[in-house]
Length: 223
Ligand SMILES: C[S@@+](CC[C@H](N)C(=O)[O-])C[C@H]1O[C@@H](n2cnc3c(N)ncnc32)[C@H](O)[C@@H]1O
Image 1 (cartoon, rainbow, N blue to C red):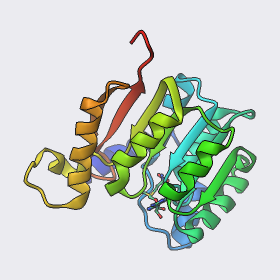
Image 2 (cartoon, rainbow, N blue to C red):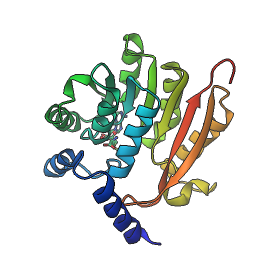
Image 3 (tube, rainbow, N blue to C red):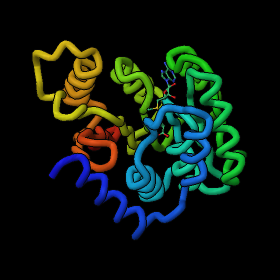
Image 4 (cartoon, rainbow, N blue to C red):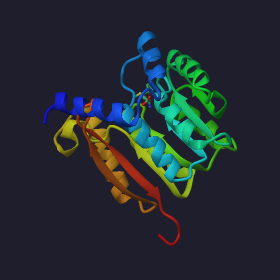
């Protein structure tokens, strides 16, 4: 199967299982000229279902863009829940704010604008942590740094998910000089070595091509 086939399967699955959920945000992102680098609709719904399965009430997201994945996560945390989402580009954050308010979940979402490595220390000082789930989807070169931060801001049993780890299979190329691929390999090595985490990486195909999520659970004293 090739990318075109993967995309047509995604279209079939979206028609069957997702419909127009979240579609207004994707349309608004396109109208605003944001890059189409959001998670796909099946991936967005998968994040939503993972958050619900984990009973997540406090979610941290690193990399908001126009708030498409944020909306899926905000719907999962319920009325009493919160999503703190970190975005570098003020223009992206503005579109996200409009999308989230229009979707009726804006009151649950705290968008912090700035480089995540600068805003994470502020998040750590707030009462928002510990987070039940962290979704990392920003500048890939900092993935290992973001996982280290996520470890400080979570509790045993929390879930940490990192997007775009497989990079069309390039993650397996130990000689790659692509900084994003090297960052993926650094992340996998961290996940393997970190005793506080139990992790896997799941490859994905679909409208966004061939990639994959890292999925990690924070270990407790008896894990
Ligand atoms: C892949 S997009 C996020 C997509 C979003 N999670 C979704 O699926 O709808 C990555 C976002 O991270 C932001 N970003 C890049 N570097 C960042 C940084 N250092 N700190 C915070 N956000 C950053 C980009 O501006 C972009 O909006």
